[in-house]
Length: 469
Ligand code: 6PG
Image 1 (cartoon, rainbow, N blue to C red):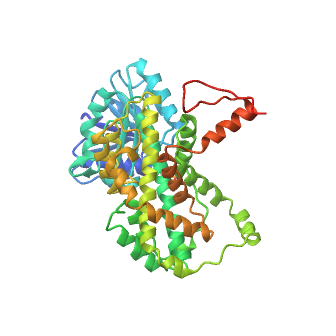
Image 2 (tube, rainbow, N blue to C red; image 1 turned 30 degrees about the vertical axis):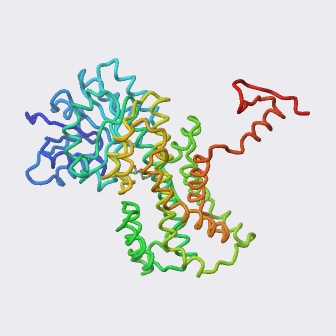
Image 3 (spheres, rainbow, N blue to C red; image 1 turned 180 degrees about the horizontal axis):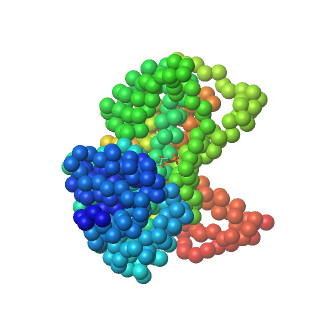
């Protein structure tokens, strides 16, 4: 048996688990990984950077016995029962004070259940959101750990070393109590869904409206990525238009079927927002658009029955700069919605999420990284208790400076039959949130008329009912 003690253990050597563990080893820590599949442990050792200490074992006991205490053991297996199975296998092997970390996209109540199950056994359980895909895991992810603060302190040296860096600061920090880490990651994914939907709507207007070909689309998104829209998702969008399909020689993007998949994190965000009574209409719309895209056959049938307005490409060509500003504004409003939900959930679910930490770690390494996040980080540093970024003067100015383009683009899209629901819900959210008196006094009257549900008055406290007939 290898006598040396290892600093960090990984259960599950799929691409994410292997890449994260190699990243740990690249930063001078002794890394040991377990997988039932000998091919994966061999692949781990074969991929290790020369001079680093990396070991792959096919016995969980062998891994645990060789970890220095308090042990740091990350689990990266498919979310759900596999995580519970690994925890049960670890229980007879670990000691009080050890830290078990779940790095998957886990539903936050599962994390809370595991946290509460392990705490009485003297074990720390950290749910950590990991963002940035395989590349991020290998060379610098954004990470969102939540749970026991002492456990975070013991993980800090390793996680700060392997995280992406922005201005020299690691894109990892404490996200709050209990399941806060996985909750923050879920909201990250909800915002990711919204931004991806908004980019696809802009692509539609540029390509099918203004008639830009893929090369022109590549140039447009690449130019936008050099300015205020600088972000990972805009960057990869520009790259996508360059890729040829090896089979047909066509641009690959044109060969891809318009039916979107989803692993579910966006749906969770929408479901939980409804339970919390928080409005995130652009994220809701992004989930719905994926659902509408999935019923392709019905859409083809319906397209034969329902005519679209005849488009005038010149109208669309004149709006290129407006699409950029509309996209920029709608993306800001997507972060606004997701972060307002995070702030509400932090209080309602007793997570004490440091809002500035969430946006700080999103500045690099993650899928929704963008230059915009520096603006949000500064806003929460000014006021971590801010209920909504639209109440921050600097953010309010950013939106006001570009909102006219959003209104124009939505008008063009609506008049020409382009489904731009992401942009439309972003504008509706903005207009509703910034309206002091909404027309829902009438709705209250209707509820009281047919259901005697009572209403409040503008001139005095209390609940009132009127016999309307
Ligand atoms: C990340 C991504 C990742 C997510 C993919 C797929 O932060 O690296 O969010 O965690 O699994 O985006 O998500 P969907 O299949 O739901 O689009």
